Image (cartoon, rainbow, N blue to C red; front, side, top):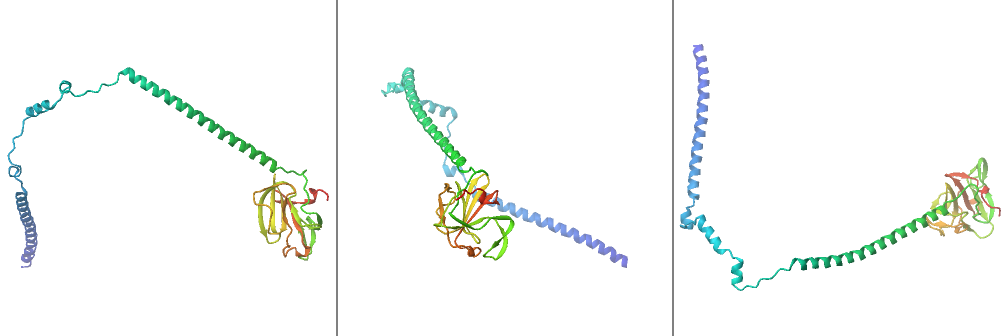
Length: 284
């Protein structure tokens, strides 16, 4: 009995599977036929009868069309016979003469323009060369300094704090001994500060220790530094300053050197290394 039911279950499974496949095939076939019938109906509805739309027309054959085209062609004899005016074209000699005269005019004009352009360009080149020469001469003249050169005193007066690089000097303001990379000059007359040598204004700054400070570049790595000045500086940055030209006036000293009184802070450097200014200064 069990074997019978087992056999029956297996057979029923295959029977159900076959039934499903046949159902899918039948459904697909039915849908496809309905779609084809629908398309046929749409085509019949959208069909256009050309005879009803445009009527009956006889098409001409190719030979008849060519005959019509030959009848439409107009020859030169037909134009002359009709009395139409024919414009005579200029002869080849006249055309050549006109082209030659036009070419001469163009050559003359272009020659004048070329000369003017050449003269203008040559003038510009000469001006640029002159500017370069003036600039190079100015640079060579401006940036020239050596160890054998001399400096004038920025102010006439007395050194109230000397330069010292290898030994300690007493600082009255800080009340301690320290090295000093510059000299401080108290003016004996008016407090006008002058350039010690010809140079270019590299920088104008407000330093906490030296106050309003002007730095002049003299070339070859040499610079002079002027500190403790008033705010109304007489020079501008990048300005070329002549030897002895007024830079500014002595101002109120900062708190780091107030015990020295009114003075100018004067420093000389070579490649940003301080050197003793006294070896370059001319004796008062």
